[in-house]
Length: 287
Image (cartoon, rainbow, N blue to C red; front, side, top):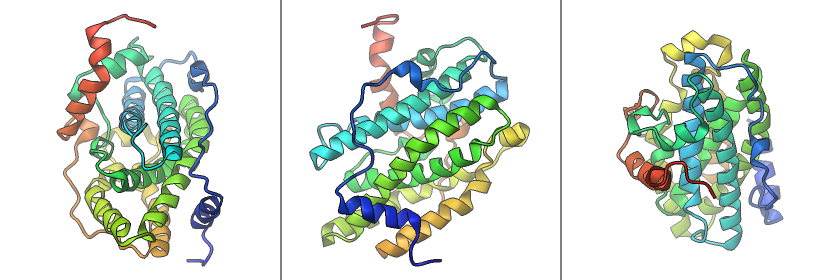
């Protein structure tokens, strides 16, 4: 391991300039978020894989949106809100593609599926908790997503490759933002350090699910990013950041975590109830 790792060095540089990720607020053209979703309809397996990735992004976006007006500083309201918008864009592209298999729209998939029909990993369902809990979760997920989209750029499925190419640029900022905060909290006060240690231990049981291969991955072959192949890159970033922050990888057992097959933790039901209530109460409404 070298003394100057680009992930840590970039985080330190951005922290020096008081930049926490991309916090600019630009006019968002939602139609532009549907990159790579052309006329080719997804197969059943491709649609199932798109749901996994899209549901991860959708549920995490919903979770991060709760921090707007509640973050520890105004800049974080903006930063977390922008990360949530990026993830919503990823979710839209992926759900749009998944829906091409059976004619459902992205709204149908977001608002009118029940809990067992979602394919998100358990880690994105975990409660926000305090700010440290959210940062620890975000560090894990953004580091995983960076590895996943990096691999998916060479997918034999052109739509996945196009979505990955766009999404990777945004996830790069998400990862940088979380690394900055991991270092700041671990190297701050006794209280902030105790909280990030506790938060990391709380989220770590849900890490393994992100890297499990299954029959769907075997069937998709080079169209998908093989989860197990992403672990080495993920662990490399974790080891570097934890070494800089003087943190230890938690020695905890992995959860049973069955989100990819529709078996979810309790919090997902509460998240969906809040996210879906307006669409279900007023179906077809527009504004």
